Every structure is written in C-alpha cells, then in structure tokens.
Amino acid sequence: MALAVALHLALHSLANAQETESFADVHIHYNWDQLDHITTREIVKRLERANVEFAVATSTPSRLVDELKLEGGDRVIAFFSPYLHEDGRRDWFVDEAVIAAAEEGLKKGRYEGVGEIHFMSGFRPKPNNRVFERLMGLAAEYEVPALVHVDAGSERAIVNICSRHPAVNILFAHAGGNLRPKHVEAMIEKCPRILIELSARDPWRYGRLTDDNGKLLPKWRDIIVRYPHRFVVGTDPVWRVTRTQSWDEIDEGWNYFGRLIQYHRGWLAPLPAHVRRAVARDNAARLFGRL
Image 1 (spheres, helix red, strand yellow):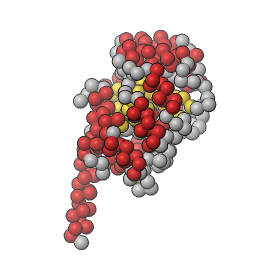
Image 2 (tube, one colour; image 1 turned 90 degrees about the vertical axis):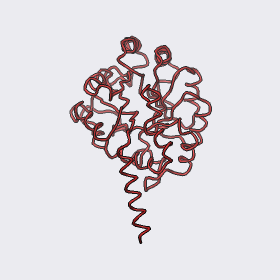
Image 3 (cartoon, one colour; image 1 turned 90 degrees about the horizontal axis):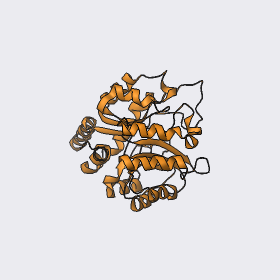
Image 4 (tube, helix red, strand yellow; image 1 turned 135 degrees about the vertical axis):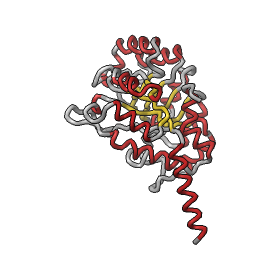
C-alpha cells in the first residue's frame, strides 16, 4: 500500500514538473474562419497559460499572421503562407504574386519561415510546381525553414522535395498523417535537414501515435528515442480538417488547444528527460536560434 501511494505521488510530481517545462508549439494557425471565434489577444493568453515559450504561426490569408505577431511579439514566430486570400489553397501555385509577397516579407524580416504548404497525392498542385520551387529557393536564400504538409502513402514525395532542396531545413507537418515509423525513419536517414513534426498526431485525428491511454506506441517510442534531435511537436488548432472550408461555419479549433497540449505533454512525460526536452522545446529552439 505504501509503495502504491509513493508511486502515485511520484507520478503526480512528474506530471506537475512537466507542466512547468517550456513548450515550443511548432504549428498554430490564425485563419479567416477563426476570426469570429477568437482574437489575437486571447490566442496569446492561451499560449502564455500553457507555458508555450514560442509558437510557429501561419495563417490564411497570409496577412493575418502579421496581426498575431503584433500581439504576441517574440512569443510568435511568423511564417509566410502562400495562401494570399481566403481561398488561396486553390490557386497559390499559379499566382506569381505569391513569390513577390514572400520575398518582400522575408527581406524585411517579417517572416522566419515559409509555409504551411499542402500537397495531397493525386491532386493539384504537384510538389515540383514553379511557385513552390521558387518559395524553396527563397527559403534557402534567406536561411529560413519551410513547413511542408504532404499526404502520401510513403516517404518518397518528401524525400524528393528534400533532395531537390538540400540547403533548406524542412519541418514535415503531422509526420505526414498517413505514414508509419518505418517511413519516417527512411525519411530521417535520407534527409539530414528534416525535422519530423508531430502536430495533430492525436486520437481524434490520426490516432496512430499513441494507444487508447495516450501512451506512445512501441515503434514510435523506439524511433523518437533513437533520433531525439529529429522531432518537434505542435497542436495545429484547426478542427474542420476533413472538410472543405465553408463560408457559413467558423472553425472552433482553438477550443481544443488546451486538450491538445495536454495530450502531447502526456505522451512526452514518460520519455527520458533529455529526449522529452529535446522534442518539447530544444530542437525547435535550436532551429530558430533560441537556445
């Protein structure tokens, strides 16, 4: 009985300790369909309450991230989104204005990265389109990372991207959603400048990172422990991810922000301390010069 009580107290103490550790959220959004639901001030307050030291933010349309950066200051790392207007995901890859806007923002230091940029197997655009190639060229020129989301059944598409752009640090969003640890390991071995980003890898979306109790599945734990400096984590607080954006509904993703943070802190907590800290903060801090 005494042993059980001691174990419970130890676990409780560990959980409390995790709550006080800084967290780097490498994937948040402030999109047009969230404007009627949450303000920039409230977003920053939620980041503060969750002890998020800094967050990588992107928006649709692109200009909204500037408003969040203005409110959040150094807590917000603004990325340039190629989606210049509300429906920008449909035409960004044929819009030369994207390149001009990206270059202007990067030159003025408004942005510390480019993305999120989405690709889906079998749909337009393809990752070798001219606008994307130019964006990656700008990322290399200004020495900023690119946040890339590729939905595919293997690592081949992202490996092709990193092979064409070996000078760019790539944040691979959501670990691809469809990919397994074996795919991720192949990606790590073939792409030395890629960071595997685990945002939205939760039981309500993809459900392949942890078991029903929120514990890392063995193969995921194995690869994270073996490559502790190649993983980062985030929340991605958008909720209608499986539906086309609609004009008659707001996105209430920020309602789930606290739940997502707790989910990620939960699977991180049992990891060795050096692994947990690397994934939760230090790898992202190193990428953005914040160590």
